[in-house]
Length: 291
Image (tube, rainbow, N blue to C red; front, side, top):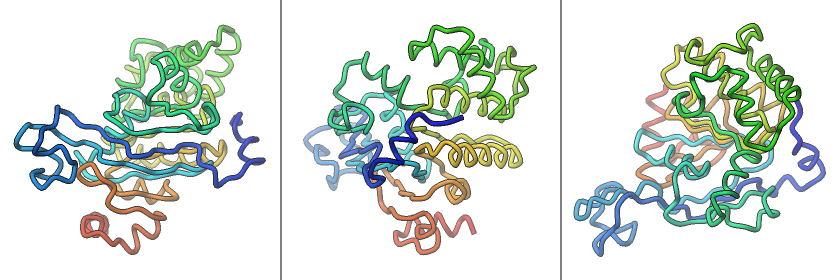
């Protein structure tokens, strides 16, 4: 497989991000005069006891660069999956800006675009692999049918091309072709995740979002899925955001990492730096729990 954006990266400045996120916020609830400022003293962690509003993401800003794997780590409830849902338009952001290099030269805030344009971005410029395969796959479609669904959504109408593309992808993620017409509901958890990866990569997106993709899998299956992701990333030079609460996953995949707690980024840097010399007490606790 080859990534259609790779040639652009080779010729262009690698310091130009493929994705820029600026002051992204997500709150659940109306807010009130007591918690109107996200840093209000009334907040208990990221929750307002007065009005019940939860500030799930608070002023999240970062850049993702060509061919980079960016790790996001944090405990359950830290806001990392909420962030991923907003980037893939599964959930609407409360405020903020997101720019994608391959969409209007990175000059339009995609959060303000129409639902039709957001579908275009999802189908052409991004892929996502969910923690729960039920969210990323149609369990009663065949495996190759799942891949074809993504291709059709992007405007492909050539059945022969779609079948060939599906076969190439399934082989790439180690799904035997004699099982390509089987439904994912008949597959193991690890195989379902591999079908999700194939579907997410079907249109050669420049950005791939991976949200807790190994959670709930046996350790040996986790290792196989992580090896697959790492090999595909090296082959395709794709930019990835990898969310996990498991620092072992982040250590294996991510070039750079940021740590989230209570909806905020509390520490960021090169992955080795974060793991070997954590500065924030919460990150220190995370790293020590891994040792």
